[in-house]
Image 1: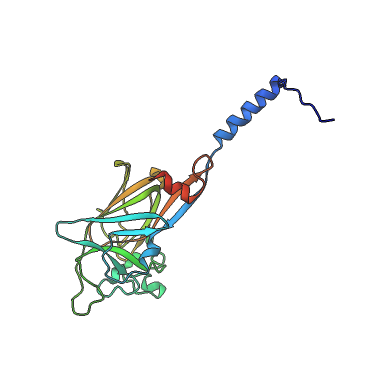
Image 2 (image 1 turned 30 degrees about the vertical axis):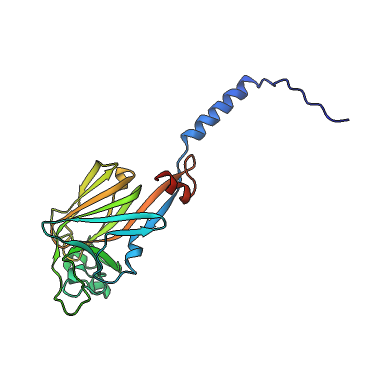
Length: 240
């Protein structure tokens, strides 16, 4: 004979109800970012020819737009720190680590110790090819490099050769300034990491340089939480 099931609701014990409610509140309170999609835009620069103007970098469905502000028609270009030619202060690593870099700020034991090969980076320069032997070396410039991201996330990058007290970094989210900091003057050929995570997720950063400075190792971590999109495909859709 088939089993019969009563439709009468079972009323749980009050203590049980309280336990369920407390458990739910605790679960909500403990929700933390479960993961982050890590995007290394500098990886994409490595395949570009030295001297290539850079306006947009695409990586796994995300984009980084590069703009430059300067009094003349200058652009951001790829610069190979392994072969710095006329700019040894931008070389990586420093000569103390058997590299082409030259400058006291990047020497072994200094605060701006320059010990890693950072490969190809972004600099502000006149628009022509660094590898073209028919031209003299371009004049690298100071100015503002603006990096705009298609997705909000935690931004980090490294600066090479900050040799003054007037290099500023400003972070934006949804067109609103959310924080700023001043890069440290660590001397010629120095390297320093700029971590903007303290300002939360951002989608734009402006780097105002005074002197010849290179931007390297540009990374964006897009947070993914358990209560929100759980795949990169879903994250991308949420920004469309």
